[in-house]
Length: 172
Image 1 (spheres, rainbow, N blue to C red):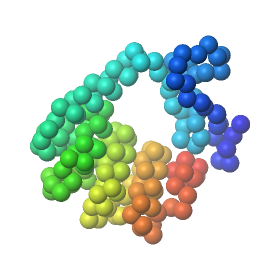
Image 2 (cartoon, one colour):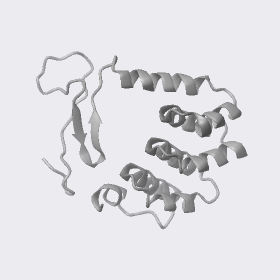
Image 3 (cartoon, rainbow, N blue to C red):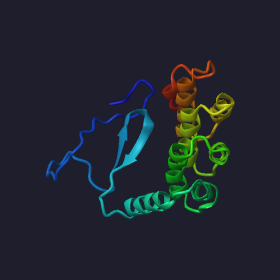
């Protein structure tokens, strides 16, 4: 089955216990959900899951604004930077250092970090957020464009695309 923009769509049900059903996704299998794209199915002991948990632990251990700023700006692991962004936003929303770090994270080399930064900038409605998110509409990564479009809608900015999904995934 395909959706209106030609993306393969798979109906997925969430399985809360082990199943022998041959239609359930297997660990390591990639499934498509709507226009967002492939979502890998991973077992709990998958190395990628371990890396994500470790990144979360590192970001959680940072308790001061300076520690979180340092993680967002300098950690070599994009998963750690991605985990640190929403924590920085939640714990220090009024800090000038946090706000400028979140703005700089909009140009991070990793698209996941950019998506998190876009959400943070929109959630905080930082001064100039509309201009920052409008610039992100031209990002080469569709997920970043989608988050920017949603962020602009959230801000009530007239530059927000009417259909963020089609804008990000359907016209490129």
